[in-house]
Image 1: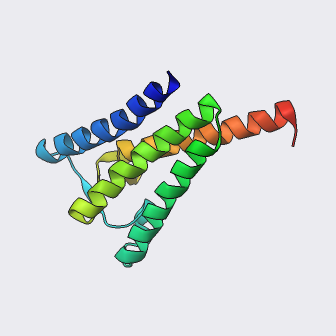
Image 2: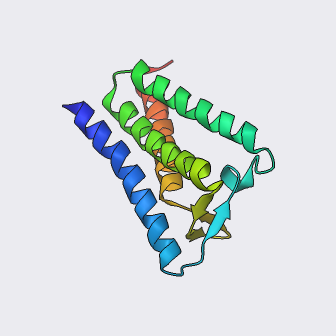
Length: 134
């Protein structure tokens, strides 16, 4: 039963991210095309960036299947959905459409999913350490 939840989250992140980028682009909203990773990291080394992104997705998938704890898998589903959506756009367009302004930065829904999943996973690990020790 939980598998359906994970699949729905993963597909929803990809769908919502792609639709929001399409809407932002067609509505005339200010967008930024990021040809690198976060903050433009590796934008001048596209082949290395592509390799690192595929490797990161592979690691996230491995971690997803390596544990059977619902909350961990939920957080990994968010991160995988965001990473796959951004990777798809990198491969398709050579860059990722960012349109949500946060301070001086521009991000997108996939980035939010990745950060939410990462933050949730870190909080889970910290709480687990305090409750169960090392």
